[in-house]
Image (tube, rainbow, N blue to C red; front, side):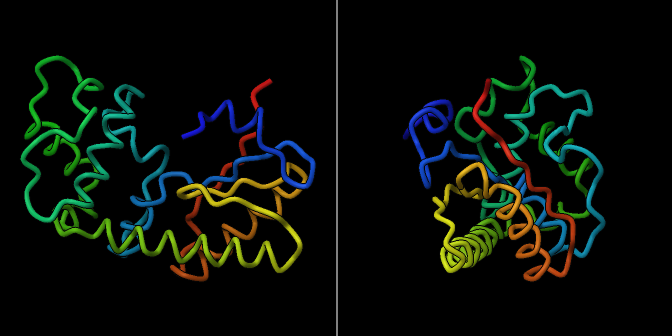
Length: 179
């Protein structure tokens, strides 16, 4: 429950400030791999192609991946990120058009399988780091490591994604404490 800024301020690994090494847009990227489709350019969550409502689109896309059947209501907290008057059905149609290659996966409950892949990847990554004397803390689709080990963790995360999916499409970012 610690805020992002608090993590950078309070957590130290091997006596160093931490870096947050994070898979970007992991679930939709895994869905594209599953669909054997080419990854879209840019931010997958920028459905409107104008940078607006990203958090809402992210919530909706992931809810569609986890839903088992038709989504009947807005995901909690998503509606506030959309223009006033936007109907759920219109947003879903827009999302399906933007991500047509993975639209058949929406409503199939695939998200739970993707969550398992995420867990398996992170267990492997944390285990590998540990065996190499690098302390880490898993955090959803990311690991926190001492800043000096961030590039090692990034390469390992990219390699693990490729090993498990056969695709080199993983985007892994490194975030240090804000200055």
